[in-house]
Length: 463
Ligand SMILES: Cc1cc2nc3c(=O)[nH]c(=O)nc-3n(C[C@H](O)[C@H](O)[C@H](O)COP(=O)(O)O)c2cc1C
Image 1 (cartoon, rainbow, N blue to C red):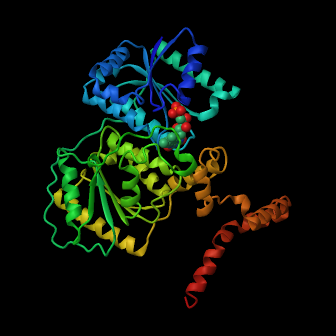
Image 2 (image 1 turned 90 degrees about the vertical axis):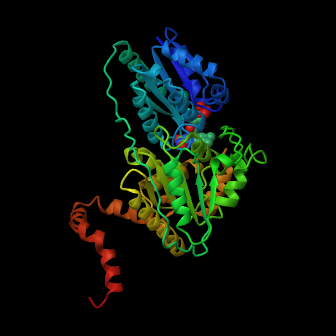
């Protein structure tokens, strides 16, 4: 069979992900795997229509397509995202229709689920048949057991394709609402209360609703707020994956474009940040993705602590829970507070006006009160994963993270808690005795609320 491999690594052939494809070439010489380094060569693909068409022609004539990519900031790399946008912009979707496909990623398993969900939804939008999806941890290829597992997976994929087995889509097509938002004049603008507010967008002139939402948001304040359009910044490219940042947060692009200065001088000094964008395929634009990728110069260390975040989104956000999850998780990991999402999906213009006014007031209030909502699983689980990774196998490369994590007290391993360890040790022994275990289990429900009841009694002794 003939497979076209679309490589999503910005490092091109010098990529961990591509080593798995080399393995397949050697392990299954009867099949053909042709690679296209689309993320690395995106400028050429974008600027030279022939290069793009060559790839599409190969896809047309192939038995299957392999989406092979590294995880980049909850998703695919910005350049891979751009390639996906080009497929739709240049009406090339038909060449993918009814074709079998395989999704393959390498990562450290940090939100591999959101990247898989994204690309699977894109495949469904392209009417492709997903024959299988595989998420490899970076070094899996070096382990016998993992190579066996991967081989079994690939053999199964061959069977599905060879047998022309049926495959069900997982995601319904998106339904875009036809609605023109017309913001009214703001009657009572609120005070910023000396809070620094920065609104960042990628709005183009044709993004009518997004521009309306931005205008309304801006007008909701009695004082000026800063509005920045990403199109007006010099951003030379997305993250190259070179990891120069690992040692001391230096970036290859430092001094070459505006990104670091913009991040440090505008965003890190803001109290309230508004992120405004229009949905493109199943995410925001590739420009927004480039913005999020480039933030990686601060690697895994939170940099927006205590800030209030408002998302203004034009497009069917409620139909893409995956996108909402990414945007929430991103800010939980930054230790910022998501005040809310406002989209143009529901209600009339007046409803949206009112939403914007209310969220505006909330953002200022929360900022004054320093309110950060409790973290959900999205942030808690992610932080534990990074804690272990930065302490362990990532430390060598990400030394700046290690130093910052120590400073921020993020190495909060349970084994450091001596009292808890002693208690666990003692109860572990005592509960081996059936009579004590019986008493303990009978006391379980009451035991779980004992400390809560004690504090309520202390706070409200008279009741
Ligand atoms: C900027 C950047 C962002 C990354 N984001 C993620 C991520 O969100 N989740 C994850 O599990 N790994 C992430 N990684 C790790 C890569 O996915 C992993 O190292 C991958 O194997 C690299 O593959 P490649 O050599 O083919 O590019 C990231 C790496 C870089 C450099």
